[in-house]
Image (cartoon, rainbow, N blue to C red; front, side, top):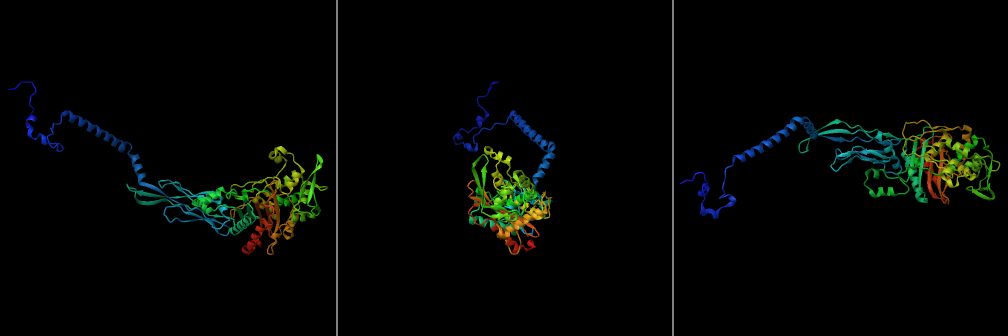
Length: 557
């Protein structure tokens, strides 16, 4: 009997159950699990979700393929094609005779940079300089693609030495494997640099300065040799120096640290970027000023007893004694240059007894005529000029005692006090004595002749008197260490006292050769050595001249 409209008390699934089997259901196999049919509501929900997801994918596909299809196609092509650098060779640096100063060695690894190499012998490193290599990031990609000159010739002529890198195009598959490659631009090598330097002379000059410094405790040194007519630089040596190979490779950390911590600054090329108290090497230029102003006959003799006494104009009971380096007796101009008499140049510089002096104004006129305060214009970065003292300089430098005194003029006349000069300027100026008054512009590049700095207003007869005095200095004066059998040299030495105690000195020598037909001028300074030294720059220059006689005889003909 049925009751209409009411739920049944026994459901069909209950009838199908085997009550005896209930305890033995394997629930992991879903035994005994009741299965209900999926309702229309559930099916509708699934259908909605499917349509929604399909719509999202379809819209994204439309966005990628239709809206931005071209852009992503190009990006895919870029990802498939990758650029690779073909490094251009850096130019080789040669000396005037074709000797290599800096060059490349190809890498043993394809696609890697060329290795920059330098001469092993000391002497040319601070001139050559060093470079930085192209640099990779952590992923192996070059973020700096060029060789960069960091110092010396490498830096000064980096544009000329640098080439233009080439480009390879690499085609890769989805895994990054190279499928093919092709060059779209060949590398263009940098220009070779042909310098005027003679590395034989350069290295001999450096060797001599180094040995002397180590033997008698000079702090440093610099030497220059130039062509008196063209300004070509044969030597531009500076001691101490760094090692170009070490600085380029960056592998010897201890050596680099020692360079940086060296208070002598081996990175400074003292030949053109170092200024030094010149001492008596300025006397030839003082003599030229005195001759041109006609304040003294070159045959007139002045007596040196070893010192002069200056009376205090405000208190006659007080006086100052200024010493010559020795008593020379009676000397005329030529002899005064030969023996380097201080008293003679005190007289022509500041006046003494009845002898009129140039005075500080005219001293400055002639020292500026020879441009001691200016750079020479050599085609290298970092050149500096010197200084010539005058009342304005003193007032600025010593404001607590700014009055200019006669003693200041005397000291300036012998290259002391605030006087300073670079070796390259000293070489250019002595070249002007040799060539008759032209201040050449020094050049480091072969076959590049720069416009001269100008001519000085000195007559040939005045130059000749000074030349004769410098020749006497070599024959039997202070520069007789340069008296060689095979070549006649004219020279002038200088010993510049340093500091208030004057225990240390700069030792200088300047000159030119051959005497009768001048071709080359030189200047050398040994910096800050003990006053007690019996040898100085002249001994080093003699070694250089002996090297030239044996190995470069064409320079003395």
